[in-house]
Image (cartoon, one colour):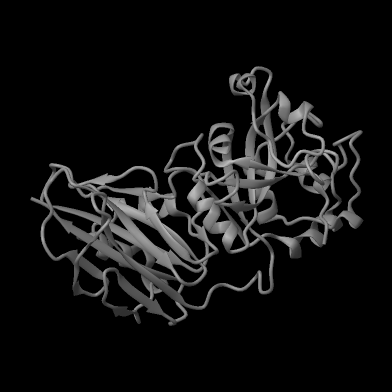
Length: 365
């Protein structure tokens, strides 16, 4: 089914700009909350962007809501796309909406061309502007052994080859500024995941090996041995079922903070299976404060108001992050979790509760 770009754009355009642009994040939020209409039900014209849908048309759009989206940037960096994550999502069927700086030969000399290879003048980006497009494929062996992404433009079949062109990875990294993976609408869009299935652990920056963990009881796991202060590490989470993932930390003075989502533009929704490292492009470090770093992984079957949850945990008088999670979430937390050992720890639950929480304690000296 082809969907109407006008239905989405006309509702998210920059105030008083008519047809002069918007933001990708607005489009993601619009499609997630309100859906879209097929092209046949909401006509598109390039002459005006002022037509707004009726209440009846808005109701007709709701069944076409996307299941979720994920901002793919390196850590909290707003201007660097995570190309490895892009390939992971593309391989599992998620198209990628991108924001890229375009101009020069990209606009003037692309008819019939298979690829965009920018000139030296293009790299100066004089007269360039942001443009939203869709990445629909990748090939690690394109352009010899350097690889590239296949981009679908919106400028008609005359641009590139039938409206598409390849862009080398290095070019994409230089010109692309935003990327969002889209989890399209599918069967059971209103259904919540009925089970949790994750693996988790710590991974050292040096060598990429996992830090052995031992079960302390309940949902708490601790490193089997202390690591040296100053050691850099990441949190590793693998989801084998659709879920929402949040990561919290706790300061030595007991205050809590949010490790993921990095910013409000980053979605906790994990619609494809795979392994994610937090933070993706930066690192956590065992600092000089205290003898233990404490973090929590919260996996849910629906989106949670995580800033509010973090505030509630910080205000809780319960002792320890595990106790605070239980005090704040109460009966929403699964209490029937099965753990399996390995280089990372597996956790599965089919109890019908809304959330599964894991507390990780990292000893340091």
